[in-house]
Amino acid sequence: KNVELENIEWDGADSSESETGGLEEGAKVEARYRGKSKYYSGKISRVRNNGTYDINYDDGEKELGVKKEFIKIIKIRSRSRGRNDSESESDGIGKGDKVEARYRGKSKWY
Image 1 (cartoon, rainbow, N blue to C red):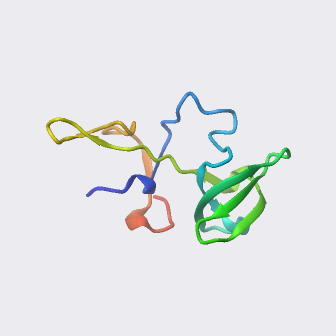
Image 2: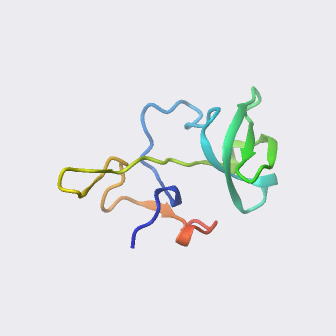
Image 3: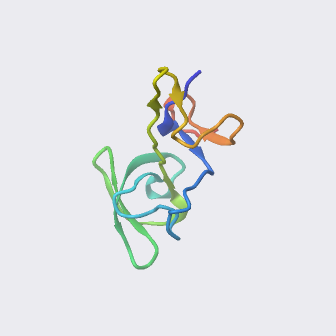
């Protein structure tokens, strides 16, 4: 079965990412609201000098001063179709790569 890319996480980090691991203003992320166990999607609205982040969640909630360990960056890359109408692996995920995925788009990562 196919899994939507936003439900996949892998260690194929780009070498162009900064020391913050891609956690920068405008980055799409999932964060543990108020440090609880469930992750919610949103965007980083501000990077603070003390190493925490302000998050604007997709459901309209906002949270200030979120610790880095409560945030996962969402890496979404597009898949393109070639001349033969077959998928090309422009997303960096290949057969045999170790990934984490959310079963049926639910919140738990496997």
